[in-house]
Each structure stands twice: as structure tokens, then as C-alpha cells.
Image 1 (cartoon, rainbow, N blue to C red):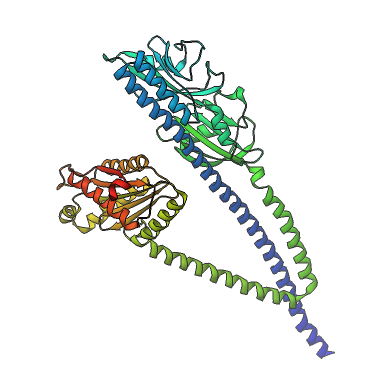
Image 2 (cartoon, helix red, strand yellow):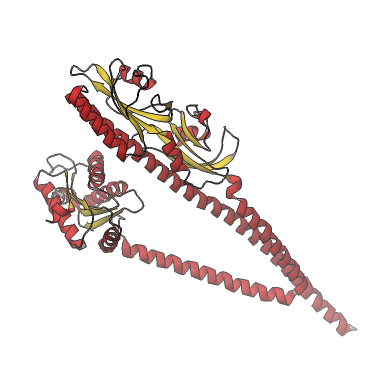
Length: 514
């Protein structure tokens, strides 16, 4: 009896500890399950956030391209009319030019020139519709505003074709500066709709395009009666006014009351905002299914643990501890590998890609462009009088200058495929896949202007500030090696320096290499 009592006293603490351990493990399992569900919830939202942000970026890029096409047409048209007029032979030439534009631009619905009284002087396509547009809002705008920039108007129904269009117009001045009429490009609203229909935003998702003042231009799903209505009090416009030109947030729509994850972007240089959104319910539908399945699995595991006893619990606990250690070791190894990769591919001072990564990317992008037959551009740029800058302000000041210049260059290479790199010393390079000479010249000029806008003091420069000389080559790659492109861009860079510095020199690669 005394021996049995002693055994009972020994077993009771062991059983109590086993029950406590089992209970604690079950609680831990439930906690891990809850944490994993929350992590999956946040991961699903994060993944959709990235997806909608990328979609908004793509939508903004498409819209910017369309409005830039209209802008370029208007610029040429205004110059022609103010120089040659729009009557007689000049008008016929302008009409032929309009027909060429219309044949090459799918988004352009019509091109027009109206006189000071609103009468149509030139158009494409030719129409027998009403000849006077003096009553249109965009016409009245230019009558009372002397600015020379393009004006994006509210959507209207075209009198010549009967379809909904977005009017983009510019003022035409007489030689004395008085109002002489307008040039007008109308963009087909249906073109934007067809483009937006290519994107999958779910059955309750939406894509919208609106003016800064909240005037709705297009919303998917499309309802023509909503075109031209105001969404100024809607969540997207209100968020843009508070948070700036780019943003992502979970918002509830005023139109249909559906809660969605919205990503919006304001177009650069145009009074327009584009947004894409997916409904929260659809985003988390798969997650909810996983919740039910995983919760059933966890419940079954808890019941199995309770039935299996202390020994099985201990074995599972040991196994889970080992697995957790392996996961941590794997995460640590992955972080170390990523850190090593970053060190190997980036420049320590500026954070840009280093020369090694640049040369690998150059070879790869040239090969890709050669296979696809697409255009490719390379910018080589150099800080003007940098040695003198270092001599006056010291290496610490020189390093700070290079970092600021590098940030400006990185901002210019903003597309996902672009690559900005420090080529060596104060010399930088930018790869621009799928980019024409004019596109590359625009990027280079934007970089030069941004650096000039930094107004970094440089007492030994004639301009009194830090400047940048840039050489640009572009074209469809042939059999030439990457070094030939670098040499061609380098020659243009030194042509920019010998021509006075702080400028861009750009040529087709065929001319630059020759």
C-alpha cells in the first residue's frame, strides 16, 4: 500500500503535466492557426494591392500615351495654322495630314480646326454635320483663356459621328495675339472601354477615368448615362485631394456601396486620374474557403492529439520545433543570399546598379530587342566639371552630389524594364528597352532638367550649379556588340560636352556607330 501510494503520487504530477502540456499545445496550435490565417489575409490583400497598383500604372501609361498623341497632333496643327493659315492649299495639306493621323492612331476619332466664329475650317474625316461649334464648352474656354497648353474637356457626343468622345483642344492665335480659333482632337471613348475590358477585375471590380474636378469620363462596368456626371465627392477623388497623385486604399464606393481595394494614379501633365479596383469580397473569397478548410484540419488535429496521448504530443512537439528551426534557418539563409546578391549588383555609394549588372543587362536587352525587332535606347551621362566640384567641395561633398544626381536619374528610369546604373566615377548609364529615339530624348531631357532643378551649387561651373551632359543612341539592334553602343553613346556624350555641356545630344544608333 505505501508503495502504491507513492506510485500514485508520482503518476498524478506526470498526468497533470501531460494534460497541461496537451492543453498548452492545443492552445498554441489554435494560435498558430489564427496567426497563419491573419498572415494569409494580409498576404492576399498585399498581393492584390500590388496587382491593382500595377494595373493603375498600366492604365495611366496607356492614357498618357493617348493624350500625348493628341497633344503632339495639336501642337503641329496650331503651328501650321498660325504660320500658313487653314484656307486654300494650306487647308488641303492640313486635311491630308489629318487623314494620315487618323489612319495611324486608333484612339483618334476626329481632327478639326475651327475659326474664331466657331465655323469648321478643316476636319478629318469630312462631315456634313453642323459646321459651327461655338457653343461647345471647350470653344468657350479658349475664347476666355489665353494659355497655349492643351485643354481636356468633358466628354461630349460627336456631331459628326454620334459617338461619345473626349475633346482635347488648343487655342489658335492671330498674329496680334487675339483669339483666332481652336484646333481639336477627339479621342474615341469606346477605345478606352475596349482597352479596359482586357483587364480582369472580377465581376464586382471597376476601372474609371475622370477629370481632376471629378467629372466621370468612363467607368467599368460602362453606363453611358454616368458619363459626364460628378464623382467629386466619391472616395477616389477625395483621397487624391488628401493623399496626392498616387494611392491605394480600401474604400466604399458611393455609386453602388461596394467596398473595394482601389489604386489610383494621376496622369503626369494632364488633369486626369485613372483608378482600378477589386471588391473586398472577391479578393477574400479564396481566403474564406481556406479558412474553412484549414479550420477543419486544425480541429481534426486537436482531436487526434487528444486521442493520441502524451507521447504522441511530445513527438509532434519535437517535430514542430525542428521544422520551425529549419524554417528560421532557411529564412536566414535566404536573407543572407539576398544581401549578397544586392552587394554584388548595386553601387555602394548611389544604390544604382553597378557596372557589372549594367553590362549583363545591356547584353541581354540587346539580344532580346534583336530577336523581337524592337527599338532599344541607351543614355550615357556625365556630371559637368565634376573634378572641379571635388576640388572645391571635397570628396564628401562630391559623394553627396553623386547621390543626389543618381536619385534624379533613377526617377527618370521609372518603367519596370528600365535600368539606371553608375557606369564609373561621375558617369551614369540608363537602359531603355522598347524605346524610340524621341522617347529616349524625352527621358534624357527630363533627367537633365531635374538635375538642373536641384540647383546644386557649383562655383566653378559657368552656370553656377551642377549640370549634366547626356549622349543618347536608339534604334533596332543589329549584329553590333554592346560595346559599340557604349562607344556610340560616349561619342555623343563628348559631343554634348564639347558643344557647351548641360545638354542632350541624341542620334539613331546607325548614325552614331557609323
